[in-house]
Image 1 (cartoon, rainbow, N blue to C red):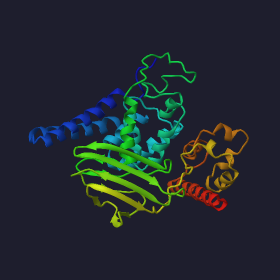
Image 2 (image 1 turned 45 degrees about the vertical axis):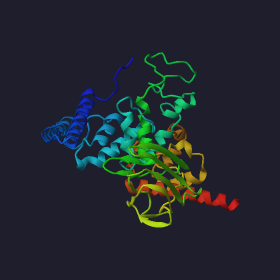
Image 3 (image 1 turned 60 degrees about the vertical axis):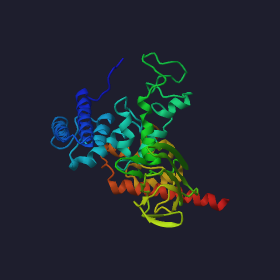
Image 4 (image 1 turned 30 degrees about the vertical axis):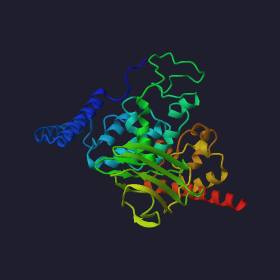
Length: 371
């Protein structure tokens, strides 16, 4: 039985030492303790310098590529800015190698989805959140869970308790994902100013929730008003003395109670009914992160992918498509370089995603014509 994960203890401990020093520095500032604030601020800076020296190579490569290590570094800002994009790509690549499933435990799970959503990978975060096979949250739900387990496999598919020990069926750690749901799916972020910034996704047609602030209850609801994802409606109830900055995706302006606003405008307490038409429709589509088995039997899609994916003909050789069916195009792009194919670049990947969006839009239009 393995008691510890694959991420080095020293890396985890140093990361949380840095976070702890930052928290104390901010607390001291709030308490007007200038000397303590300066001391712990400097301490946090020194810890970060030492962390980067110890755990990164000169070229910016982290000494380990576990999901936990990469998510921690992104979420806590433990990297040199010049290597930021490379760290994001490393995390996405690591998840792709893990078949778009999480491999995190107590330490990494709270930071994994926020690290993705904060760095332009919200669709991947949602995909991980909605997985229903092991390991995932919905795997537990499929097996009848009404609380979150200590282990991803505390109960086995046959209904028996796992014999590996320590199997609490009501454990908080993995439940920390709901902070991500409130902050990114609903979009409630509290800091110096209240910010409402939902990461709207076509994986959900409607999302609503509420939370108590210091002056009352904040309610947020967003929904896709049509099946084409061409209109978004947001309803807000903002409590007294808590004005909120409103930031909505895929638009520069929106209408609130008949009044036109620019994205980022401040809304005063009260009831708000917002609507807008996004620049790009919110349509549920396949993507470069989708496993081949989700679309490989669709002849129209595979015929078009032959023009977009240089290694597609290799996949069509006898036995290959079945062997690689659980891989995504992005993962295969990296794997195929071992047999001479150049990995797909960002523009090629974007072109494939654009095709998937176009295909999904055309399918919706065909369905509308038949109604």
